Length: 310
Image (tube, rainbow, N blue to C red; front, side, top):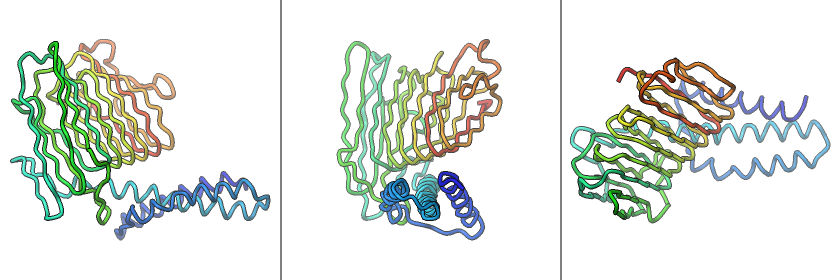
């Protein structure tokens, strides 16, 4: 048997067993304890190339598959449950904190001259959400440990640019849960261009009420829930991720075009016709007045695009 067959077979079998055991009995493998061993996979691959004995090659390939499976499993396990810890209280914009966390609040006033707005958000890792709207240009609350955010604004010619970035890219990882968190409320009047650069994260972005002309999300091992609306005639969305669970909701009345360059991933595009290997379109794309262009580039991921009535 070829070593590559042993590697891929061991990888998928190991991931399947880990997921099955987790579903049946529930257990936790801490991401920060496993992730440090990822260079071992490179070492094993290198030794496999050098040795000639096929039996030894098979053992090394199987071992690297098991280690990589553990890394992938713990990555998904660590990010998948971040948004379910009731950290945010959506009713009154309240953040629950403990003594090890600090909180920052940012507010930038809205000017009716602002017709176009650009938001850049950069953070190493954490849990992030966009919900509700505000009469201000932006309201943001961040909480966590061992870091600080800074907000910079630049405006002119009916345009405004907001840069909210983490100054220290360290993050707190305690018992498999990320503690750095940020929540945004934005003004619905400007045409928005948004750029998110996040690491191992869980993100819940409700953009149904915003005029989103461009949206770019770059993330590492992440869980993303994204809701898009029809406030803009054309929305261009680019999502890039590593080991990710991505769920995008698009209005059924909008025409949607999907380009999906994804590897080792499951894709679920219900209500879309397949034009080519990586190209999908909704049946109403040509006739729809509003159009959404989705470009998804992801690694080991689960990708779902759902058409909704909202």
